[in-house]
View 1 (cartoon, rainbow, N blue to C red):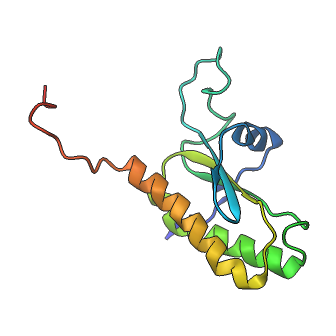
View 2 (cartoon, rainbow, N blue to C red):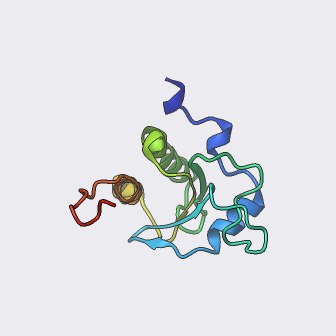
Length: 143
């Protein structure tokens, strides 16, 4: 039951964590831009891009940027955040150790909330598929 929760360790809290994720190339959809950075990267201090986040556990984390410019009312902003958090919470055990920053990049209405969640779920499912070793071992690959 605790795996499906949304504890403090699963949230991006520091400005540094947001900044590092925003320096990556986003997945761009109709409504969302999803930035991701590996939190379990190598600890080589000479390259800040591959250095893990400070005090970051090797588990997926989520940060959101839902601006008043794109979601005019607080009811809409909170509805979008709830839907994004819930989709993340349900998939968190299967996700790779990435820090995700989700940014609402275009104007949305309350009727778009389901499309926004579907776009976010598609992004998460893509990462889950990419993480899982679904490729069969061929005879030439075995060494």
